[in-house]
Length: 218
Image (tube, rainbow, N blue to C red; front, side, top):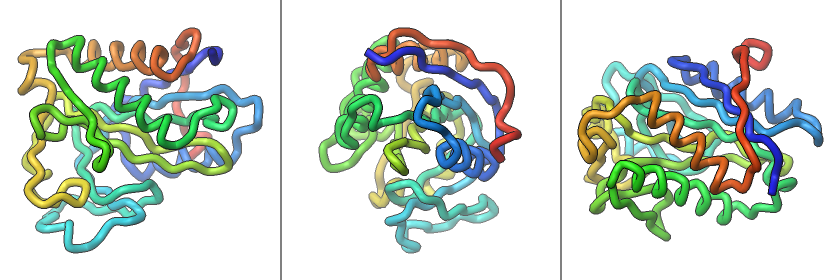
């Protein structure tokens, strides 16, 4: 079992600021550096992964599109979506990439079960689904044995921008969110439960709250 997983709650933050900061964190971390998870929300933005195809961007309108270095196709981030960036030394943890993805999916499935929502993963389409509708997306990058990027859980947000794209490259893919499945919820409570489930499913002994921002990494 690993030691402590640190969590940094950054609130609403520009996507590119977070992206450049996590890349720098990953590039500069030493072999003994502790693992961190950054919990954020983003202003509206579409992000296009390394295998993304232009035809999956249908009508982005005034929402910016950012080409990024994670796996996968296009997705949407916006306020009311809980994003967790996982800066983990995967090599030290002893996880393969498929194992890490499965652990993240199981984290989300367990979190949703806390709210009485039955969810499942799909072998051919990473992410978590409720009755065929996607509720959470995954996108990772591994560099020098360490991960960055992570997961995005639709909690209580405007889902309309997802109709401007083929989410994750799937035309007509239905999207859903926790508030539509479980009624009124507290965003902060969802975040706290996600922290606990990540510690459990990633085999850490405990969690810690980290103070300070990420200005020195952007």
